[in-house]
Image 1 (cartoon, one colour):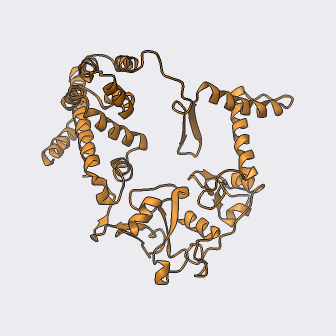
Image 2 (tube, helix red, strand yellow):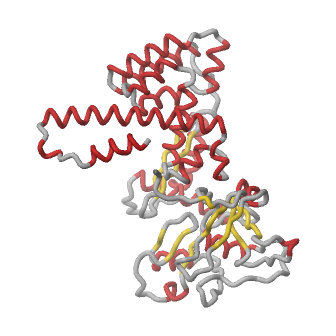
Image 3 (spheres, one colour):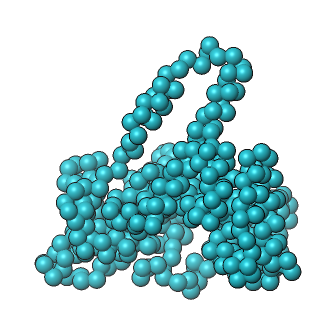
Length: 403
């Protein structure tokens, strides 16, 4: 490992200005191969960690969660690495090409996305030999453009089911939602025929019911407004499932001074899913909302509610969510609606139901801290308030630059 670090350090200090165009391209090709080989080793190591449950050493359930929480990979990238490691066990030629640097991580993912446990089981049932596919895919990946491998993998799907896939409306449905740095949201969905008809009928009913004269919105804008209105209607009706004893609702946190001061600028408020709003936008939301007041103490933290409540009351839960924002176990970050409010000093040991004695933990890590792991909040003045996590052996789980 130290030799690899030294080699990378040497590459980083090379002067590129003295290279010819050909040398630049040769260097680029070489580095692509190095990246491929390093990706192969990462994939192999992560698969080994998955089989040995190495993530449990840091109190996490899976290598995917460790990659997200400790290595700071995007969730989709962490899933790709784990998925690829599982697939490589069934395709030795592809694994060898990956290890040699001739196959990229993206190419391997083309196979891993299509050939999962279900497809492998079907192939075994039908007596389909994977070796010819393995050899063909490796040859295509090593010499042909990326999209050629996509077409080659399609041949495997066709071999599994030459008559076509039976229509199962739940299998093909997908909805992805991504929030950007400025708080805006984009999404994509894929629906079966009947599911798509239902969504279109619901949106169309609102679009057609609200067509004021002179409306110059595009059809896409009308559809988007209708989708938001559908959600407004459902939230207002109060019939949606509850999240941790609390009905789903839009949360906006804003200081009272910002809320009443018309001169306040942007980024004065924070939403429940982590976006920021201007004070003007927060006032707009509050115009037709229930306002919950949380009184803050001298240190800027919400006050406690004493020991009279065994079950955490809703207003204290909101205060804990407002302070912690997500599961506080190192490397986790699960959203608030996945979390319990944990008593740091247990109720049976005279622990108070108070903000200072509370921590937001997802179900898995709530269990962990009742079986040897420990979380504790620093007592320093803000911004020194931070959560720290210890293993059962007393060593602290630290997240920092990876070596």
